[in-house]
Length: 252
Image 1 (cartoon, helix red, strand yellow):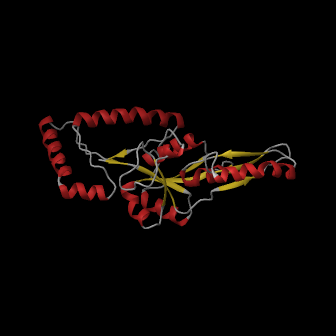
Image 2: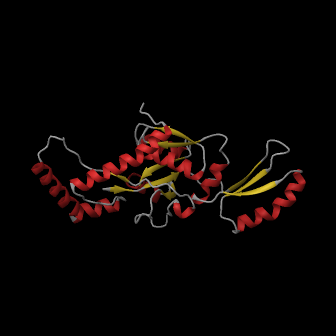
Image 3: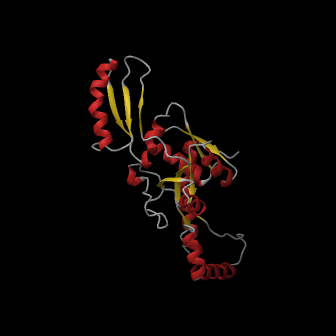
């Protein structure tokens, strides 16, 4: 069963801001959280030249589009890492944070929690800026307006939240963290038993009531064979293993 991860924030973040220079010779940046050529960008570029004369230094416009303005807001905080929560060290949400930081060019402070419940509460309470979570665990809070979705960390939009664009649509490429659940048994289990269990699971996921309930929760029922699951595990082990080694991620 596949689940799409979604980047979420508990409050609307600022859309654009001026980052003052720390020295006379260093340019002042106007961070615009939208693409070049839009109305905010046009206004910023219109005032930048005169503002530079007033400040006696160069003023440059720096476009940081994506995630409904959140990328621009986060760029303002690059000197101090922005806290982002996950459900634990080495979890898929943690790895999504690492991918997102690299793709967006941001310094992110990973704040690991022991599970999702407290992380969600702290995002809504403003203790951490945002987090990546599975759609099934978030969709009720999103629909209630308690969490603001910033983007889907997947290659396509989620059918349960069709108005939420993917991060790639917003110019942030390289964040693809579709999560999944599966059932495993002991390696000593006889093949005939494995096949019987697999067929039972397939019938369960095909049952209309179960399928409709899972889809309503934001999950994507995707039954597979044992061989297909083994292939998926091998592919994800290679994919995430590279990131884990590159980031030197270790368990508590």
